[in-house]
Every structure is written in C-alpha cells, then in structure tokens.
Image (cartoon, rainbow, N blue to C red; front, side):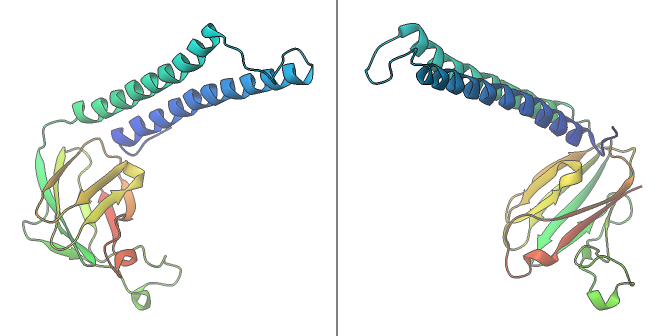
Length: 210
C-alpha cells in the first residue's frame, strides 16, 4: 500500500495496532463476563453472598493498569517517531488563516502572499465538485523538505489535510511550524477544522504536490 506521506503511514500503523490491542482487551472482558454468567447459570457459583478472592482482585486491578501502560507507551512511540524523523528544511513557506480564506507564500514560486479563495459555483465547469476547489492552491515540490509557518490574522483556524495526517491550529499571535517531507505527488483536499465563524465551511484547502 502506498501512503501519501510518512506521517500518515505512522498514523495508519498506529490505528492498525490499536485495533488489535483494544480488540484483545475487550475480547478478554467479554470472555470473562460470559464465563461468570455461565457459572451462575449452571449454579456452580453462589452470586447472592459476598466473598473475597485476593488473587482475582489483584488480577482485575493489574490488567487494566497494564493495558493503560501499553497504550501510553504505544502513543508516545508514535509521537516520538513523528518528531524525530523531521529532516532539516530546505525551503520555507507561510500559511495564514483569515475569515474566511487562506493566504499562502509558496516556498518555490513567490515571496508575496497570495489569497486562496473558494471558487464560486457559477464559475465551475459542469461536473466539478462544489465547495472544494479554490482559485489559488498551495504548491509544494515532492523532493524537498519544506517548513510551513502557520498563523492567523483574526480568530483560531485549523490547517487540516487528513490524507497527509496534517492538522495544525492557526492561532492569532502565535506561529506554528509544520515540517513536510516525502510527499507523494498528487492533489490533496482539506478544510479548516476549527469553527471560525459563519464562513467556516467555505474555506477549503487545496495542496498540489508536483
């Protein structure tokens, strides 16, 4: 399977391993519940009086603690891998969130900000998707290590490209840095994923990796 970026490959592996981990844990809980119910149904255990069983109490306390410990280690390993694999940046760009459009400084084409606005429905060709295409996509080269500086001019926005495993908040008065490398050529679509006002649904993101 070909992934669009190293980040989404790590996140996909995390999801697959988490599914196995959680399925095993909840499967064990289901098996234990069925075992207790079967014993009660067959009258092999008395459930109407209290009794103590120290080994069993230690078991049902230690197993959830072990599960949480493994889950935390698994998450930290993925977060560490996402950070440690970032190479040195060879080009720099800028993403600015506005109400309700994005402004880009492309790393390779221009040093001036270009506004990226939604293409109105009356200007689309027949059969083109609505509320997705913009007049000025963000262009990034595939073989370079790009660093994007993300911020906002007004309220909190969120620069999100799910296909690449990217979601970075654009906060007024704060610069967030995003490092990208190993991108597969293609056209990627994202949206602002932080509610930012009445035009929140009308500021899509188009990224072209060439």
